[in-house]
Length: 312
Image (cartoon, rainbow, N blue to C red; front, side, top):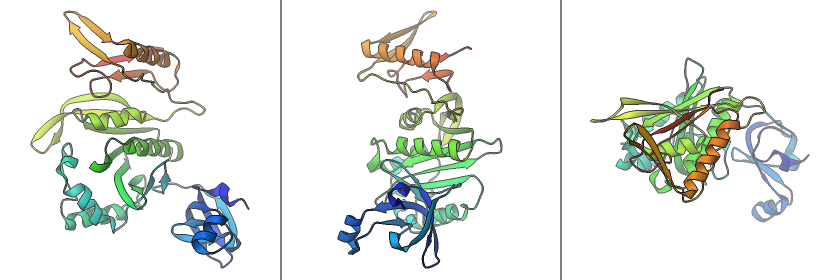
């Protein structure tokens, strides 16, 4: 059997001892196993169990649904564990900057952190409930969750602990979750919302392929402040279709102003090339009929919003 072919796939293994083990398989070659464990044969590790080739009666890839372990290039997205509560309290609960645009802090104290984590774990049996820890070598980098809605869509939210900001982890996790929800779980539409002033969250959603669909005035209360609510959505592409991607040129600058009755767009060379690519992609790209630019995702500070719709 080709064990390497099952690397990072969801599998069901039956051992020669009569055990059945399911989960994501991590493959390790014979040289590694010889060095680490003193056994000169390859193996897979599934959920902490080391299983050598000669111990495997059968192995097969399986179809999975629900909140299962997911992988990205750098992250393991895994379920919450009871022991996560202490780390959640340290990373999230005691860092006020983590809650600038969030109304409540369920991880502020060890007791509430434990209750919150236990509550999340207790919901894993619910249909279309998803909550993952962003894990790198057993260190929490962030959290991402999604919950199904009555109309068949789902709403996603995410947070990355502050030492990991600006390193692309949130985008990487969100891209994978959007792919899983739409392609594996059959959810046609995923939404997310944030305070319109939360530029970091908006950039993550834009980079992950979500598009802005509305900004509601004074609809996002946080403590004693109230912000406009920015809502984004992601829709699954049709079979065989590829989502349109926008390509920004390094160093681009674009500003949109109103002068009298006119809207004026000012851009440097890189900005003009970027806009041209956007328009070309909009004209021919499947799965998108609209793009929305503003000061939080691309335009210079103080710019008017720029919305362009394709009319078919």
